[in-house]
Image (cartoon, rainbow, N blue to C red; front, side):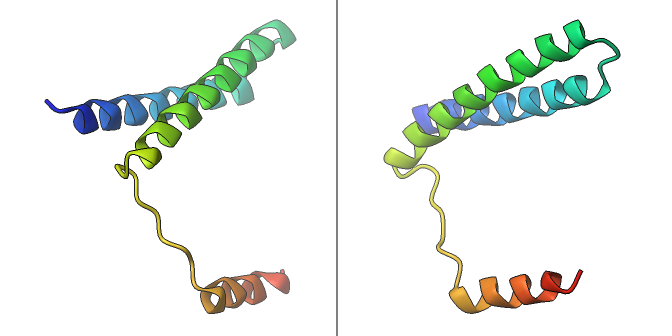
Length: 81
C-alpha cells in the first residue's frame, strides 16, 4: 500500500467520522451530549482539512475549476426559489 492509498483511506475514514459526529450533534437530546459531539465534529473537520491539504499539495486530490457559465446557470435556476 503506497502513501497515496493510505492518505485516501485516512481521508475517507475521517469523512465518515465527520458524518457520524454531525448526526450525533443534530440528534443529541441534551446540551452536554450536543456539545460533546459538536466538539468532536469540529476536531474531525480540522483533521479532514489537514489531510485534504496535504493530499492536494502532493497532487493526489486534483480539482477542476467550475466554468462560470455553469455556475451562473445553477445560480439562476435556484434564484427564484
